[in-house]
Image (cartoon, rainbow, N blue to C red; front, side, top):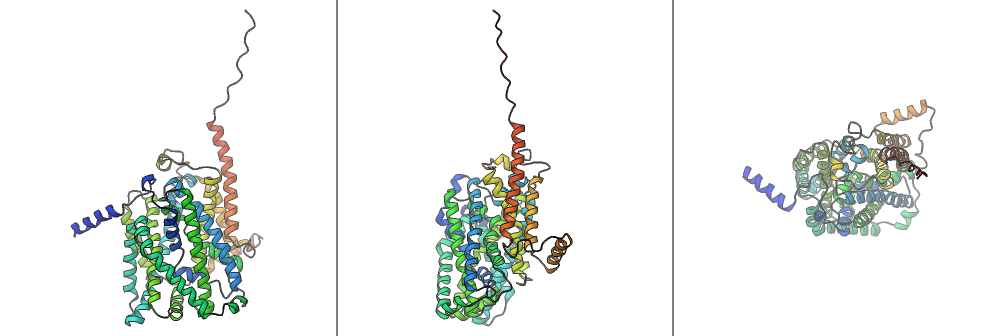
Length: 487
């Protein structure tokens, strides 16, 4: 047994070396714009994106939902691509990028939060794939074995994560996965347009209620934003910054708009329930058979791979000595355990809660990195406990303030979480004689939260920058003494 494990480990080292969290050497940065376009285009589509699109209607009309999808995708993908450029430039994963902003120890907090969301996403992905696989199994083989299919899904997705980004993109997505998803999406779109009266659907008014237009935009933004902590983990392998931006933005924008709109139309045409099982049933009915659903299921595996792989990056930022592959195996097991007890009742709140944490955090990062110019790190800067990013006790406490206030603005605008949390936020605002919601009716929460964190980070950053310059720049010497006129 030990010999078999050793052979497997040597094969993995040859095909997919496990690069840690230190900067990737230039010679190993192999991704072109096309590679990243394939990666992010494939990551932006799938069953869960269809399920999220299904949440937009019939509360909104199809024109309103389409506009929300375009606006939300543009905003979210722009932020995603900008952070990806930083990962490409510095060659380090997302949680390490936050060390210069929050401090070496300060980056542990977003690492823990990111790990929580990654395990959550892994569980959701496995849950959706297990449910769909079980539905196919019941129809084809009359076998109802959800846990069995969940085990199969968990093992396969964990194996992909062990392969790493370059192997998955070059040998899985570009040779097979992306064509599967494109073909399935094209066939579903054709069937929806063919079976539905698009003119009547376009003119049908929305029912009102949930979601409002602003909240729908937030829900769309939440999908690319959920990848913000992960984007640098993959874009650090990009050859050039321009390729990183173009591949990330256009790849994700194309897939996100397409499948969000397709999910909304599946509800209107086929009456799909807004969850993975309901979407799967509608696909089976509308597209004529279970084979298409099975192929769509195969294309969903890359999302789980990305979540599991990036979880190892967060764990290594917390515990650098933990082997990457053991971290990957551990998260795969946790995702499996979560999927075994998961329900979709709180899926929409989970999406919005991700936004409330990471939208303001990366507002602070964008201000610090792109406006204040805190970039061009050396490896010693990022990993030396005596270096300039150690701050006080390893934490840049000043940067925590705009992040926290941005989170407060988000929750004040659109509280996300269980009912008791929403009620507590509302009671607090009422007790302080403050308007509630703050911006929810007009602007949603993502944009105000990002702007508040961004502007406050600039304010405290410029002040700290001036103080640092006063400490570092030596005093100018006084004028030279006057020459004596005496001979």
